[in-house]
Amino acid sequence: MLLGVSVVVFVAMHLLPGDVATLLLGDRATAASLARLRHQLGLDQPVFVQYWRFLAGALSGDFGTSLRDNRPALGEVLEAFPTTVELTVSALALAVAIGLPLGVFAAFREGTWLDTAITTPTLFGVSMPVFWLGLMALLLFSEKLGWMPTGGLMPIGAHMPDRTGFSIIDAFLTGNASLIWQAIRHLLLPAATLATIPLALITRITRGEVLASMHLDHVRTARAKGLPEGRVRRAHILRNALIPIVTVIGLQLGLLLSGAFLTETIFSLPGLGRLMVDAILARDYPVVQTGAIFIAGLFVLVNFAVDISYGLLDPRVRRKGTR
Amino acid sequence: MSGSVLLAPPPVGRATLLARPAAKVGLGIVLLFLLVCAAAPLLAPYDPYAQDLMHALAGPSALHPLGTDQYGRDVLSRVLYGARYALFAVIVGDGLALVLGSTLGLLAGYIGGAVDAVIMRLVDILLAFPYLLLALILVAALGPSLLHSLIAIGIVYTPQYARLIRGQVLTVRQSDFVRATRALGASTSRVLLRHVTPNSLSPVVVMATLQAGSVIIETAGLSFLGLGAQPPSPDWGALLADGQNYFLTAWWIATFPGLAIFCVVLGFNLFGDALRRAFDPRAQ
Image (cartoon, rainbow over all chains, first blue to last red):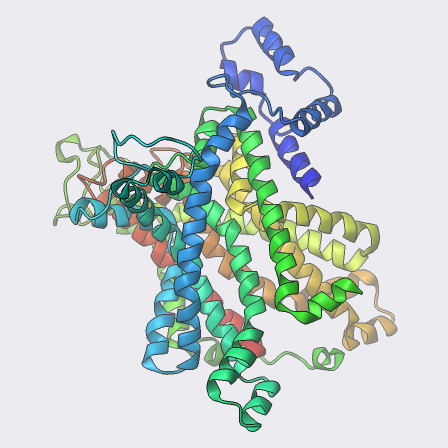
């Protein structure tokens, strides 16, 4: 799969119309300087050779250098990576922590006004353009109310040692309470913005799955044999509803990474999304290529982890795996 | 399983489709959106490109109900004309995904074997990318423009149609009435065109409607990042990007295009949901 991903990225970057050398040097470049640059970048080689060199380099950790500042492309990607992880993980945590109980609560009160009060906003949530929501949140909470910072990871001028790249972890490492508070404050609004759509989806799916498993035969049997309602709900309804819910939570990663690109732009966070968009606009293709493979590879690995987690939740999957 | 496929699907009447108020709201929004697209020149009070620097960054007023932007262009007129860009995105982006995905899905499902394996592997690889990342890579390769962003979006949404159609074809192919038709001596092309395709169509219509909303959001997102429609075109995403630079002083420039995206996407989602319920008896 990872090989397939690298082929798609490579093909997109090298075979689609648009000559990188012309893009870099502009329309007025001379034929000689174009040829020199093509030779420098290895673009005058056959495609298979180019791909092989690219793959061999990638396997030894060499993804080329950024065309903007001549630094290793992988270094730039790794530098931006913690910010994106911090943003997506906190958004997912928010979405799960709120969405899961809300969905369960709505399902157990199906048809009541509470159910409607929870499900109607989720419908709005899934139709929300995240970049607009972010702007509106900034306008309201930062500009009008002044509760939140307008962007970035830390206040301008704040000095924090960069040890792990994760602003919250770095802040905790300093032990300075005001820095920790600043780090959390700066992440709160972007994370809440990014969490909106996953939150809406997780609430809806949880409600649907819990409702579906409430009407299964074994639940009726459990009630008939006189199990207390709390145990029926925990052991028979929720346990059963959990597998599709975990799938949906796992699937949110793609959505979150996509949303992170836009959220980072709005809140000026120096993450992977911002790096990729800047690199595309500056035609810095080694960075685009490295970032794309890095993100897609990560995505494949996380999906794989989600697959494995089914075995922990569903004995049927586990048995099939060991057979 | 095959017994249930043998039964003709229940007819989709207006009553089932519009039974819920949400469905009526959804259809209403979609129709209004189409009306605005068609009648934008009649509805817009100003030329969307006409600059009036004397009235730049003016707030909402009787003269300019949604205010003006940094060049004094009327925001209402630009938002109304922007609807046409959104419709164009749905037709080209969603349409491209539908045509590409359906063709691949039909081929994979009906021919099977090596063709199926190759197509589905490609689909799996495309699905291994977060969707906006794939769109970004393709736009990076093609160069930023509205058409390129739509081609990218079309390719990004292709795998979902391909998977759906392939699954449908595999089910319909095995159903009793298709086997009966084949036993009666119908040719492959007749089976594909007269029986398999129409019976695979309803979930595709549902998906196309539900995806229309996503396509509008994605295209606007790419334009917002500066990779789709370029200024001065009144694409909603481009308007938002424009407004972002002024939103602390002139909130109306970014607020109204975003509201327009939200309403239209909500409309498509509500209507798509109603279609899904009407076509799929299990969802009711």
